[in-house]
Length: 281
Image (cartoon, one colour):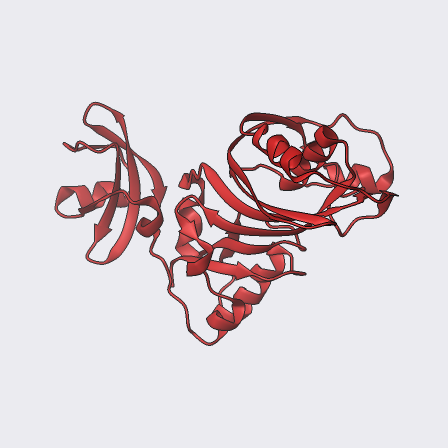
């Protein structure tokens, strides 16, 4: 079993919990996730199985989509509903003003990463500094917001959808919306609905997978590179990870042998290709 599984992560599980469950269900230790989801969040989690892990570094996904529910009137230390309440008061929010503020975030987005995050500073995770009460210079991260829309509005909460560049913290976005509109708020619920072209509706729960009701995606289902059948003198060279000469228009090639995915090569110069990832070896 080699490839990827789209998992629908439920609330109150860490991404590592999902991996640990799959290790038992699939009876293999070589499993890893890409793109962590916080325990309180749910939705699409991409999981690599066995040889799928060898190409994770090649999955250069540029955007993700979320649905976020925001609770009005409270501010927490973690920027979400799981944190300690720092401030609380009754808030009234104007829908038209909110829509205008949300729209103002579309485009380049520079923000301070949450102190309760796994970003490392001087080899130490930020949340470790926070838990120890130690001061640390918090990094500024550059991101991009492609689209943001209000989809529900109530007296004490609102819900919006957002499409962002990879690695964007939605908790930080909610904090910055709060600052700009000058209202207390925190992230209450978060669902990841899309990773690039991968959709939550195509994902499987752990129960589905336990019941063998799931589809394993092949490596090239995600890479979508041109496939070239290995034969002749090329086979030994590719299996040894050697550079090769190849007349192909595409810059990236996935070599296969019958139905097995063997190796990924990329153009180095002209007709010379070098190995990017060895899958079979």
